Length: 80
Image (tube, rainbow, N blue to C red):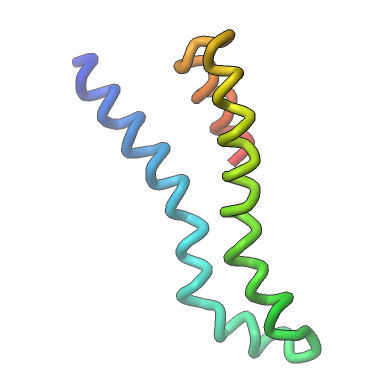
């Protein structure tokens, strides 16, 4: 039973990381709804989640030495 829970947790975290990639499929539609914005501003929809993920990944490294990885993962889920 515990292996299934671990697999489910890994799948859940991986799917949360992939949510930002779904925005690339609708990028053209976003540009149609906001014609007054520049294309570079709209493309920030794709880069901002990756940038924030990079920042928090560097912060999670030192925190994982002080806090258990389970607690760290569960505290990060509401932030996503």
